Image (cartoon, rainbow, N blue to C red; front, side, top):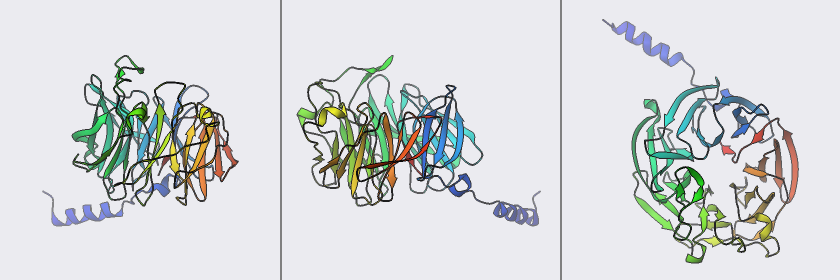
Length: 356
């Protein structure tokens, strides 16, 4: 029988156990997945200054992930398409949990936590129809699956938690073949959208582009603290057409499409990879890895510049500018139109820098 003295001793012992924070993992600013020279895969913690804080082995190439808002814990998702996600203890370098997508669905590479860290939200796609779902997982209960709701469209990819706690989902609009995700089945009828959702799945707001841009798949997202959302796109239509690849949206208004000079549009190769607002929130950048350029705009959507960097894709906010990564192991800082090397790693960085 447990006595009162035993019970109090247990409470005191539990209270004496230190609570780990991201400082115990080296205080990374970003998480990034990569491929090592021997063909193995890793998840790394990186600072804005180009310092690596940890390197943890992965069983397969990761795409993006979600960092817990308090605990030094990350969830990384398998790449294209993924049926598993890994919960990683970033202090001890251990995979502590493996999550499997529900039967008949796959993860789309992105997720986000609730503000209190109690719930993980995952973007998922029905294999047969492309219909989007948002999965709910209880962190405190070992990431037990506790529910799901509709994403608001077809082919969701990125998902963000906004400052007020609601969710933002980029529904790309594309149905792909079961045996080859690169084979697209509905280009004539695709309808990408941006969906604002309550955490119970209620649609708060939803926007679509004009019909002539229905082949502009909304893929990734960034949000400013004032509610402005940046949505980069990947054009799946006529190769001779070079539409805007970035939109800015504030709820209650129409999206602002960010245009570049006609002579520069082809350099982007109709493909925007990642997006971020800078540390001051004044400018926004999209990376175009196929074109080897970074395209800069101000908060009003006006074009600023298009510096070159081969295979650049990861981008994150830094004071007065951005941090970038590329597929050759490079990490650099971008301020105004000036690219400054920060570090070089023996790694091929994947698409994204995930803010911690």
